[in-house]
Amino acid sequence: SVSAGETTSLLLDLTAKGAQKWVENIQSGTQLTGGLIFTYEYPQVLPQVQAQIHVKGKSIFANLSSVLKLKEDGYYYGTREEVDRAWEQLVQDQLIEIKLPEPLPPELTGMEENLLKTFAEQVQHDLFNRLFEPISNTETATIGTADHPESPTSGVMYKLTWREEMDAVELSFELSVDGGWTWLKGSVSKDFTTLFGEIDSSYINTIYQEQSFPVSITVQGDPLLSTVALSWSTDDGKVPEALVFGSEGGKLEYTLISRNPDKVTIPYQAKVGFTLAKWPVIEVEGAATVAEGGNQILLEPGKWICNLMIHLQIREGDQTKPPAELPRGDYLVVNISYTGPHLSTRIRESARISPLAPMRFTYLQDPKGRSSQLYLSANGVLDGQMIRVRQQLIHPDEENVYLLASHNGVQIVSQESPLPENNHLARRLLLVLGHIFELLALLGGHVGGW
Image (cartoon, rainbow, N blue to C red; front, side):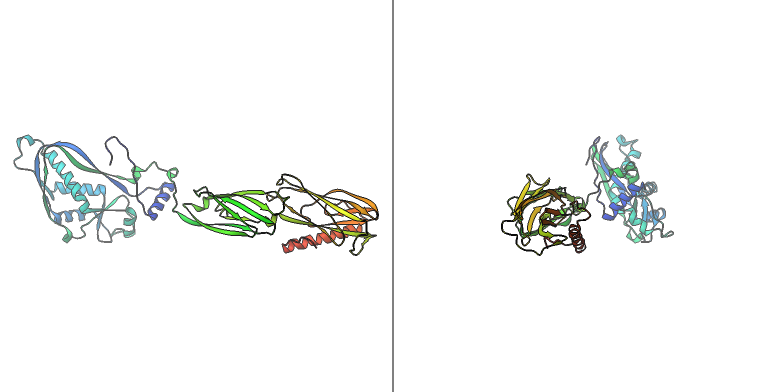
């Protein structure tokens, strides 16, 4: 309810089909069909008076059936304006008969016309819902008229509840006013085009029904993995949840609810620890909407782990000797240095190497794919001579590197090595390495050493 001078909000309860039709019409600027009836009460000073009301049902049906439209369902329909005009005619034709006391008391002289109009309005208000049923335009459009079955009817439509003359009833009753201030009832109808003519698509706010959607969190295990501490949430009200996975990894699944799942963003943060003491705890994070696959969180720490195999071969001319232990007193130490943006300090490792015992260096690449640097050098004693190999950059994609030792020193053979044209042995080794990389690319596999 609302008092004079106040404003109020209206809540329309539409079906799904009706709501979609409204959206389409507003977006396209098409006229909205339908309307609203506002009922109200107002005070008026009236004298004390009684009126006898007689409703001539059969005559009323005959009159209304001649001015309203007959539809294929056998009922008569009209707009509110048509019904109001028909009602006025019914009163004028005295088919709705209103009798005031005769003779009128002296104090009512000159008020007869106003009293008849007031009583007619109150009778219409009381009887309207008995005689007429409001029908949406979408319903009447599918009914059509008897003469034009497929033609839709525009405007707010009302159906006469009396289908045939035998449905009409005769009514007689009395209306009385106690005198003084009296609250009377009134109503006014407005079509949607008048009420909402200024509304455009900027007023449309889509609210989705709640839908469920899955969330999966998967951590792939690895022998070098220690623990993974992962925290995740959503921007749609999900409380942050902390999870811990061991070296074996695991998978957890959840079902969440949202009005618009595709737009839900799922952020996560994870701290990944490894068993090697030199390796730091790696922090990773991510965020994506469900439409972008953010509801499938996948961590694969094993893919960050790389292995570099360093092989020592003894060179004799343009060939290599069969693998054998180094002579007593000879040795070679390989030094590796690795640094990257994901490491707080440089990782260093040194180990002796022999033709029968290659060296494996296991290191951690940056999970974000940022550039890292791996350097290799060597020093030792071969054939009684001190050997020192200057530091050389190793490409991060390499998995095998050769050290060719001879009485002239030790040469590093890798993709980054500058090799003279006449160094046929080193070039053959590089060719072999190239074929291995191509084979791995075709197989999609990973080999730590060979």
